[in-house]
Structures are given as C-alpha cells and as structure tokens.
Image 1 (cartoon, helix red, strand yellow):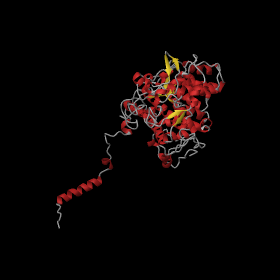
Image 2 (cartoon, rainbow, N blue to C red):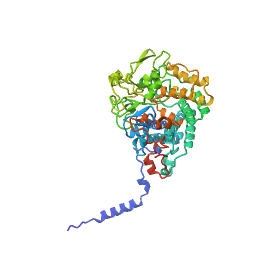
Image 3 (cartoon, rainbow, N blue to C red):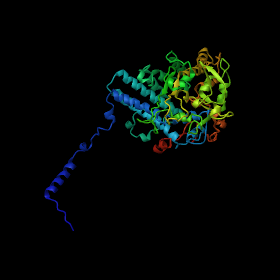
Image 4 (spheres, one colour):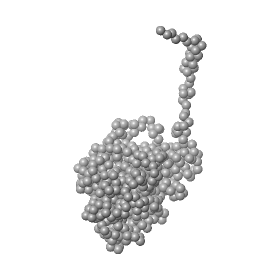
Length: 520
C-alpha cells in the first residue's frame, strides 16, 4: 500500500490559501463581464438610445408577427377569407382556436416584446445625455409602439395585462393581473397623445419609415372611433386632412415595393428582401421579408401553404356598380384574382385579372374555374416572381401598409355620419376615395355605403374583422353564415366570447391571477 507524503511547507501554503479564501469579501467574486451588455452599461449615449428604439421596432418584422403569423389573427378571421383545411392557422378563423396554439402564443408574444422594449426606452432614455429634440422623438416612437401594440392586444384578446414599466422593476411579475379593457384603452389614448407631441412631422430620407406625428394622430383617431367616441375621432382625423397626406393617383401603387412610404402612407411595416432566411426575424441575419405572401397567394399553384379562397359575395360587391366608364371597379383587379376576360381602363393602362407570371385565370387554373383568390400585395408585376416563394419565405420586400390616408377619409366619413348623418363633409370624404377609383360620386350616403366602401378599398389590409367586431357584427356576418368558412369547418365551434382569441395557456399556467377568456 502506498503512503502519500506531504511536506510541511506545502501543508502551510495550502492552509494559508484556505484561510485567505474564507476571508475574501464577496466583492472579489462579483465581477462584471465587460463583454456582456447590462442595463447599467447600455443606456449611456445617443447611440444606445437609437439602438434601443430600433429594438422596440424589431418584433414587427418577426415571423411571429407581421412578417407572417399575424395574418391568421386578422384577415383569416373575417368574412372575406375562406381558409382551406383545419389547422392552427385557420382555427382562430372558424372559432376553434385553442390556448395552446402557436398562432395564439406567437403573436401575443411578439406584441408584448414590442411593449417590453418600449417600456425600457421610456424608462431609460430620459436620463441619457443626448440631443434633446432627438431624445423627444425617440420617446415619441416608444409611446407610439406601446400604444399600437396594446391596441392590437385589446382588440384580439380583450383581457390583457397592462404593463407600463420595465419587468425588472415589478416585484412579482408572475402575479400581474389582467386589466380592465377600459384602462387599456385609456393608456392607449394617453400614449398616443404623448407621441403626437414628441414625434416629428417627418424624418430625413435615411430614416423614412419611422413613425411620425401624423401616424400618431391618425392612430388616435382610429382609437377613438373604435370606442365610438365619434367627436374626438373626427377632430383627430381633421388634423391629418390638412394636406400633409394625399391619395396616390393610382390605387395600385399602394401595394407595390416600388411605391413604399408614399404620400398616402401614415404607417407601414418596413420589410426587406435581403437574402436572409431563418425562422423568425427579431435578430440580425434573419429574414425580414413579406413571408405572409405565401398565405395570400392562390393555392396550390403559387404557394406551398394551404391558403384560402375569397367568398363569392366580395366579388359580387365589387361588381354591383361600374365605373364612370361602365367598367369593373379597378380595385377588384388590384385586390382579387378571378375568372374573367374583362378589363378596365385605368390610369393609361388596361387592368385585367392576372397573377404570377402574368397568367390569366384560365392559364393558371381552368377556363371554367369559379374560385376567387387574392392578388393584393403579391407584387408579381414589380418583382417578376413566378410564385410566392421563388426566393424563399422572405423573397419579397413589399412593405405591409397598416394605416393610409384612404382609410382616414373613410373613418372620418363614418365618424361624421354617426354624429350628423349624411352631411356634405361625410359625402365628400367617401367621394374622394371613390373618385380615385373612377367610381360614380354619391350625393348622399348610408352607413351601409361606408361599410361597403371599406371592403372595396381595404380588403386584405388587416381591418375587416376588427370592423365587424367594433360594429358588433361578428355573429351576424360570420357565425350565422357557416358557408363563409366552409373550406375549413364552418362556424359550429363558436361560443359566446370567441369573438376574441384564447389567452395563451402558458400565461394561464404561469400566473394564478390570469383568467381565461369566456367561451374557452
């Protein structure tokens, strides 16, 4: 058996080191890694403040949000879209969404990423030494981003937590309670008023796409309208009807990459086809293109996704009146792809029903086909693509328009009509939109005229479902017409309360104060 011999000097040194280690203060072990960014080391200067606000914008281009998945919580839910097959993508649209669905969790998460980062900007940027005007502009952007996302959250989920401070400052974040929706609406209003006062009227050319005071004002009007505060809504809309925005002469120019951030645009999601790929877009090197186009493109020829068809009533609505020249409303060709040999002369060219590869319906499908598909945003004429994913998920950089001046005019007409009826001001506002499309002008209007015009002008612009929701017409227009969701599962899964989406299950499981929405 071997014996281990240790010299007395080795033993003395070892014992000495042991006592030294015991006597060390915790400060020696509490070292800061200079390569790791922390809140204390980040918010130092103007460059950090700018990076912070860019980070708050970033989730907008996450594939969980507007790059793709948001479309399943908006357009796929309305009475225009008849989604093919039963899946988590179409489930919310036929009232069968679940609290475990990725489509539910991902969109919610991306919206709260925006909120969380906006809160960090609002908490830290006021103390940053930088140009005062630029600091105000950045704070205005943060107020807008927070308000915009709470607008989306309350309209999709209704019962949501209202968080306005950094999570690190909340003692028990897992015990946050859902707020009264009225309090969320009040916060949205307050934030947009702050944004109005802090944002610039415009940005330099290399900053085009960042939100402006006009965007905040238009959004505030929309927020008031959604709450039936018609006088307040009208007042805000009038502020941006001062000439700073104009309708584009050509309606189709609102949906092509060649005319992004144009004179009609108040706010749009800035997308780019930079050759990057990867699932998700909230990080450098990941795709930030229009991946949602694969869910708009006519299936199965031009997309590998299930997609949808458009319900017949929509094309019928476009055809219920003709242009001043006796032709089909040009917006029908810009919005839909349908079986027709007709054409409309519009702005020096003839619009026809065409899709990728400049193919007619008969060439793409069949001469006797009857299904109607989407065309808006596909932008095949500009980029020359043969199908929606020719360059992968993010092959198109076509921006998603969120709020444009035509919508403002129609919302103004609605607010004025609800206050005073068919006044010259209300009629003029809707007629500006119709004149751009060469449609006959109204001499008087009804609320149904406004509703119909919104379909013709704004289909596939993420507005229709929320119009029905705020008008209280989801049951009347969708639930009572299961044929509008016949390509999936009808509407038999509906229960009162399912006009809103289920609260994500991981939020319910992680917070004993969270209550699931009615109907689930």
